[in-house]
Length: 260
Length: 256
Image (cartoon, rainbow over the protein chains, first blue to last red):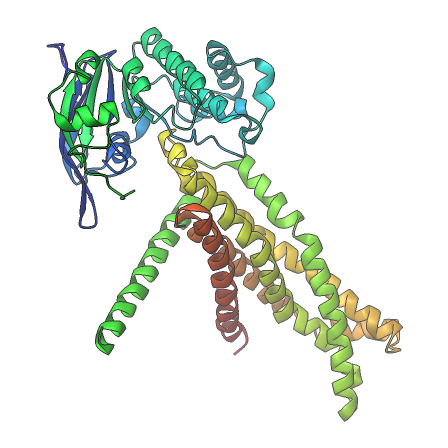
């Protein structure tokens, strides 16, 4: 899934993951060049979140391999080595800001713990990232419970960017937001990806967001990647499953699942 | 399912829980011993566990000391042993009541709070976020709470012992008519260092158990509000039961 002939920034090969007897992901493979953005769409329970949690190292793989710049990251136990070595950033669906820390401390957290900066340098970097995303300095003293869901996602983006990742994983970044806020978050994500030449993997079932964010779109269905292509090809595809999902038709071959 | 099936399934489930707790305990102890250390979080926990538990522990031991003086006086008058009231109050508090009551009260207050906080972090993916920011949740969340609890419980018990003995003194002198000097003499005369030390060692063990159970049930909580609720209840129940069992074992080790 990479246009470039050079070594891809991220390569996922035959990733397989089960929980108990239930297979969640089956031989998922793709690769991404530096600075490209892949959006993975799919229904609830299709394995999207599990996929990026496997890539990030939060879940061990049952089988498969993950490479960054040609270097294999998966260890013998199929669990990926420590996050900072891989320069991965992860933005969680519900932002996952630390309740006990204020906004500035949340954003500075990565600078302190990943980049090992001292208190002042981490704080300065956090203020710089907040300012880049249009967050004023005085908001730094507020706590996550004091701010809106949309703003929490912006802060989560700032926290992720603070560790200067090469690859950034977005878990449904616009879920639960109104259309305007969704667009604003997408714009901020795009700006960051372009400004810092980040490689991004986004999972979503928000089609507008997918069209805005992806250089490429892939669809995951029952744990298997069934389609991938440019965004403009998505609505023209002959694949009945993709067509039904992208257009939001209730009638068609798409099997709805109740699994989490 | 037949009887053997039920027994087999229950045994496997029990062993699974024991195994999971053992692995968790091993990782938690290792995290306490190895760097990095998070001193700021540790100090915050000292205030939370030690300072804020003081009123609860103080009140519990105060009234326990007072009741103990009253009850032992009522009983001892039946065989003319009223003179032993002060000694019984001091020995009971330092050896048994101080650590056990403080342990149970702190278990209700701190064990529940630790479990609720960590399980909420689990449910809202904050623990996963810590991992993605190169921070080991065992070192950042669990180790500071366990070490703070181990250190705070003996301090709380020491203060609780003094307050409880003072409660006994108040009732003995002002209600039962004991001479103040005689009461104080009777309090200290039979009290040996082992009585106090055993209580403090018990307190440290109880502190470990309270924090460990709070962290364990919080860390392994289920999803949603129900998961948080169950984690809190399980933390308090399991640490309370463990305190009572461990108390018997330690008493036998110290005094038999």
